[in-house]
Amino acid sequence: MEIKSILDLIQSYENFPKEGITFRDVLPVLTKPKIFSQLIDNMSNNNMCLNSNAIIAIDARGFLFGSALALNLSKPLIVARKPNKLPGVVITNSYELEYGKNSLSINKDSIKDYETFMIVDDLLATGGTVNCVSNLLKSQSKKVVGLNVVIELTDLNARSKLPFEVNSQIRY
Image (cartoon, rainbow, N blue to C red; front, side, top):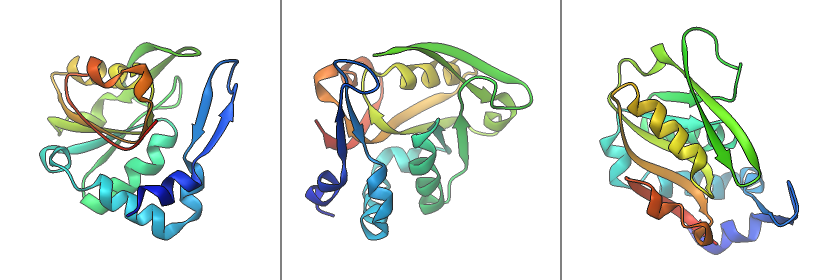
């Protein structure tokens, strides 16, 4: 897959969701099935995919890429959702965004049968959401083997703050 074909589809929005932020929108990739399929194949081709028992996708864009990866790899998919979206017993953690604060929850029963997880999201910026999910898993004595994202914003240097492998297809 040519990275240029993905880059041509990613749209940038200045000053969204607030002044000073450039929002990188990867959703147009979903309108091109062949490119989307090639992207998922590329994201599936690394050791963290082999070394994980399950995939955990972050709300909401992470669900799109995580579900495609789970299907492609025949791995279970677990979701980390925003507040008050999951039934049952949940574990919750808060995190800071570059433009606010939020929290994520995981259904405790959904992770009980798995020990190692690959986190999937659309974009790595500050690492707040990824660290939130990682801390939730660690609180349950689970291990994160890596992060798989479509886009990484390198100027925010989140990769250096993560204690596991990061696989990104596009770097800005």
